[in-house]
Length: 209
Image (cartoon, rainbow, N blue to C red; front, side, top):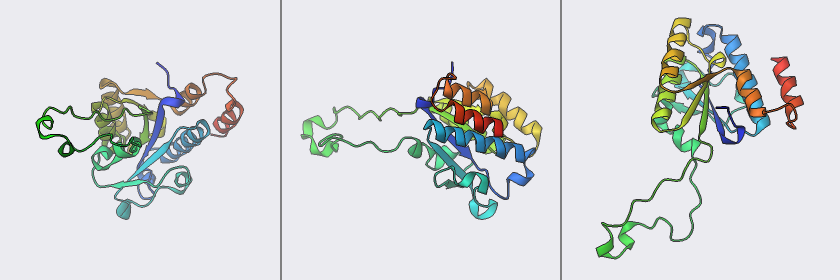
């Protein structure tokens, strides 16, 4: 099973100015996240972001801020509890008359009318990276798994204050069906082969780190 850029969305979790300085090997984590986001942009993969109580932990770090949409600020550690799923699956245009309120039906049909099925997510593979790995990243990833989405976590672009916490998080994620990859693994799987039209530019970004 390999990543397909056309099926993916990238979510960067809580890379914030007051949090990253205390993350183990935080400079490397930020550098890998920046590379991941730049490759995603190159490949047309949507890039989303979250912050945890930005008023307290600060805004998204400058190195990444220009590469993400306006971050979803949250209080819950699980971003799905505060609107992430709605961002990943925006409303779809509906045809006239589609999804009519049951009250518009004849009375004898109201109770028997089938419930409307939610639209399928157009990019159902969610690639996550962020901090802290054992808190917000873990809880968000497991919640996405519960939604029956395919979830991948980029381990070298993620971290915690204590490396033992991040190691435990990666073990638990893998045990729950989450695929663990590195930034370069994701990049080269999105590319597919050396004849991809963006290969040369992507390789330049990878070599630059």
